[in-house]
Amino acid sequence: MSAYDIERLSRLIGMLPPAPEAWVRAAQELPGARRELETIVERAEADAAFRAALVADLESALRAEGVEPTRPLLDELRRRVAE
Image (cartoon, rainbow, N blue to C red; front, side):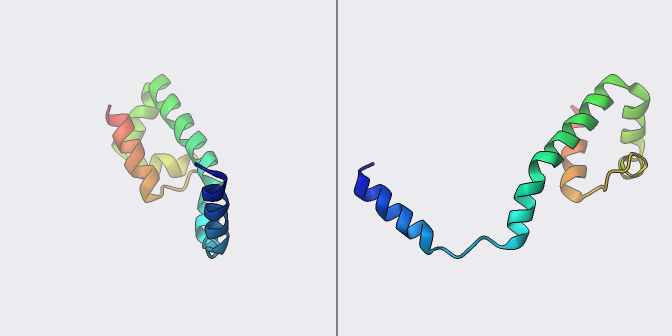
């Protein structure tokens, strides 16, 4: 990419409107959500009783742990616990 292309691209990006606040918030929360997901999966792999509770009633098991069961979290945990 030439210097001209980089400068032009920079100028075009600068003309874009700011990202919606909800997108910014979601991007900030993503690393913590990934860590939380990994912690839950690791615990389910190490603790048969916790895994059974997740399989039996995922939403209740998460709430009991103080975790809000959002749709993306539920979908990903169902996929990963079923593996």
